Length: 430
Image (cartoon, rainbow, N blue to C red; front, side):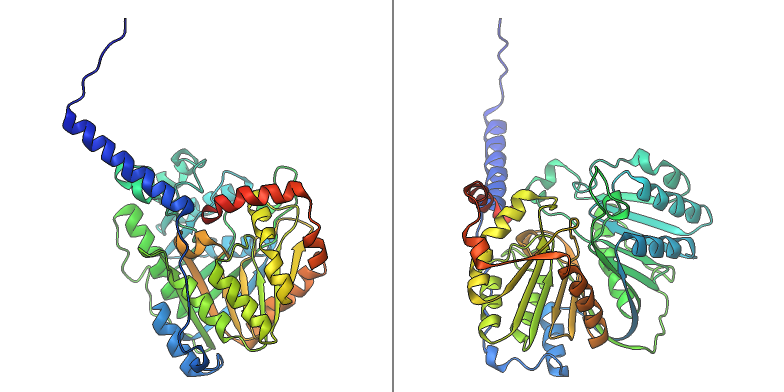
């Protein structure tokens, strides 16, 4: 015998409306239109090595221009993990860490142990982790840290009142120690960056260690999502001490959260720098899915006589559908004369843009999610020595990569073309 359950008409109508709104939001996130960017008066854009250009970037990205600081480039896990752990173990006031990926692993246990030891001495330890990217790491993993007084919160956890915004994730990977030392890059906390995992070699990635004025901006970026996740607004000398640094370094921290129209400050930064390029553009990215406006900007750069190089993962990509969708877009670039390379030794996860051997931007993916859906943060630096450091890294990576020719692309197999069609349907979500 079946039981009949009666639901008041008003409740049923409200439930139906809520379902329609949720499905509409989900569908819009899946196949909705991408933002279009077009620079007006592009011929009047000042040279990117002058102060007037800095003023324009500062205004349009709503970022603070910093003129002093020190910066160190850390290439691959054996370099950046020890540097971060050393900073944690030397901390005296606070450690703030935000990550999309914080997986149960050998390296993450080292972080928890180091953070726990510091928390026991009275150091204020705060972690905000993405509820989706770090879904497999529950609070029990952090028990010793929590017992020692540390705090852990998840960004945008599943709740009924957040259903319309569940697609928004924090993709920021940063750490700030004592309000004086900052780390920013593409790497999360997991063994694939540390020693390799699941039988695959260690991922290739880069992290930047920075001191000086920019650390204030990194701290305020962390404070934004810590407030969203915990309800606490961080203030005080433990987080914002007086910083004195006389070393000249022009930099900006450009953080971004999607607007109603899908535009972000990160996307504006990239558009301005690509349009300003006069000699060269070098892009290293794990996920290369430029929208039509960015693709056109890259092709325009080649037509202006610039050398455009793009380095992406080869067959060791961690997202094969995304790689296939990315490869579908090579044709337009290759026909224009751009150089496209696929990295062979392992998954390459570094996220770097170099322009004219002068400008350097780290650490946003070159894809739709990063430019229009996720919370992101970038460190933009105008410094020849820093840019050349990354260009030298790219030169080494290219020696271990395969250049894709237009003939290669035209003769890719039918099985790959079929995957491309599937990927194009969900391109906005990749």
